[in-house]
Length: 280
Length: 314
Image (cartoon, rainbow over all chains, first blue to last red; front, top):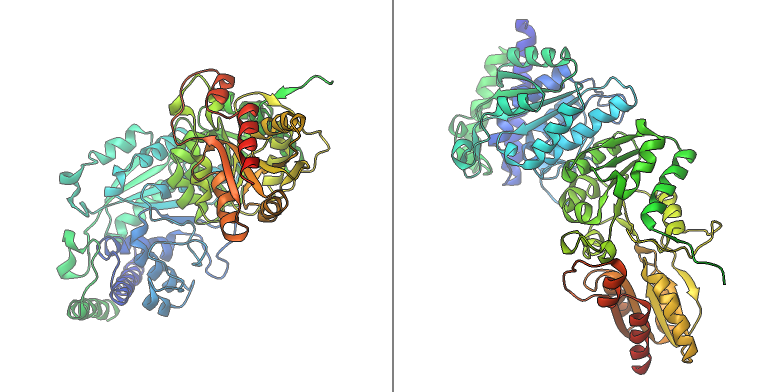
């Protein structure tokens, strides 16, 4: 990846993180940890990968993105706002009654949201349906979804994995945000879904393992997915939960807690400093 | 007297799918390894390219249906009532109901007339479950003709539709010229002594009950309430006002189904006594469908008896 492009996407990822903190702080609730972990993935998807147009959000030929781990909605909202689907100011009204940005994604109310999600395990099934739809009518759009690693404990994920593998949905790419933590603790202590790679391989998926906070590795993995024929692709993206806010990184307690005023100020300061360095 | 033709409403489901394909040619039919039983196998044979078997994975099937609908496809997702409304309730609620997607659920083997398979497969709770989902339309046809017409009509209904079909062959009571209007109850028999509001296979039992009652001098109104949500409140209130007492009849738990829906409307808008024929908050059991309908009080004799009791309350 060229330096200028990487820099541009790093700036986008940093701004997504700022949106996450802004939203969760103002809402006084939400899920910062698993939102921060996918900032690079969303920066790459909305910055480079997805063939979408915020001026034509319902275009039938567009690529689809489904946030199967719907609790990372603040990250998606920030990415959509920065892409131009709606004003960034909306983030301040996250989780407020009568406002556009619900606690979990609502495809009816928010431009750019392709599927309502939040109940874990369901987004990947809808992604399968969209990918199947493209196959049935010979359309070229691709379907992307991000799952949590804890989400893999839902049985429906494996029903969907069996479906996509068997139906050879090579227009489907599922990314597992493998940050290693779920609400009750480390995934390997609560209910280990390991070996994640071997499970997807066994369900006839092409599997790629990457550092999910590395834009270069994300780019290569999406390119490989696009060139994989006859199989869906699972990208197992090792990430850091809470990435970009020092005191949130790898801390299970930041799964679903909002920062207080002092913590908010520290997060903003850290992200502003990072942005200043990137923009220098 | 003409010979009664019997046909299951699940066969009407297949007829409806074929008829709709002739009209539109663009829908996708999903099943979960029960195509022979739900009768979507008939559609599969005719239009294999429009049929997708999702295997024994109903939760995923509902999500796949949602995804297809979100890309603009008209989808019919099929399995038994137990495995659609029952097993996949939350998928229907969150992936289909909340985004109000155009998924039409073909739920066969509703009620106790599933018969020999017994309680695990006899879904007497599906209407109650589906009624609680905002924006869900629920249709429970009385015969195969109404079932066929309901399938065609469902394609034009905005958002999700739950259609309940039966396994048992039941008398065909409508002619092919019957005009099915979703949400509009059908007065099958006029009368002012008691109103019997029935749905599904209980409509025919109610008609037979009305014949029995007529010989006793009781003139029962029989209403076919094929659409349980949105309920034809006007027909319910009118029946209560004109007949003074109401009997509901359904092959479903007395909790949460047609009887409950009718009681809710009347309690608020036109209070009167309501007696409910239905499964009395109990699980089913194995047996032939006809034996079970009698044993669980879901036949013409039981409806007639309930109507007699109702008349005495006036």
